[in-house]
Image 1 (cartoon, one colour):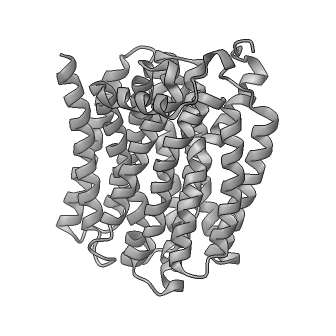
Image 2: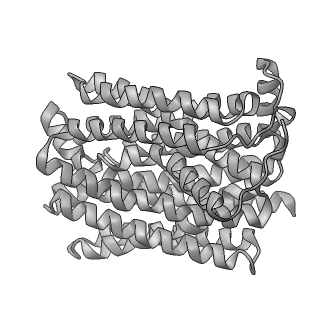
Length: 400
């Protein structure tokens, strides 16, 4: 097999769109049903913290599944693991729609997350197959346009579906998304990892690669930084529907508009990052994002502690929080993968495991105080933001 030639022109644009769809269907599967979380809790007669388990198990599936999908893509190529994952994802989404109890839904969400994990890990590996360094960071930033559309569209679609159907109809829509992406991947996504660049498929080889990555203190610090930053975002994702809809008595449609505004801000700042990364060191841009991430968490906690200021100051804090993701995600991903081009799939899987594993830890923590107060949400956001900053700071200290 000859080496893959990076496409240009129209083919490059088509590849960009397909990669965006592959990268985004995992997160979109969480975002679309967020407006339905309170209704889901009411339909099963369970508290908010129990309903948030459907977020936790889905994120756990996204985390664990990448440890399988990433290494397999280094051995088998990128296409086959992606296609198998999309088939399982489609079936899992239908099973979620048919779940008779919350416990069955929680289990099916785990299956759905395991299947969707391939899109997250393998899309990053494909980009690393094609680009490196600042070019990779720029491509990740450009891809945030497509990735950012999902938080804009998915909750809005979910809120509108709730007008005509229940939360079950949202999972039927997700299964249809799986069919569309399977067809697009099968027909439009070429193989970017030729046979001569693939690893031997023995288990001990994969274990040695993961051990090597764990011993790399720089990679470990960047992975933790990405995971903790994701934890602050997932805390918002899991807790904000209850804060907005139950505490401040706003509609699911209002929540979807607020969520969409956050996504628009994230897209705008990721494109600013793509422009700046050509002139400013990637690590410096990452540091800026992490500092502002901490400041946004401090502001949200302050507003919630003072009380009586209403919802709008909290919304502003959420907007600032999301703006930092446009700097953190593309830059830390590009830096973490830069030193490991030969095992990009496995390294991407390690990043994804930490990223969504931290999200799975953060999601249930915001329900500790129940639906009566939003303070746990603010405290979890701040804690993970500070941890993300310290992870990168420790890496810088080690290198110096």
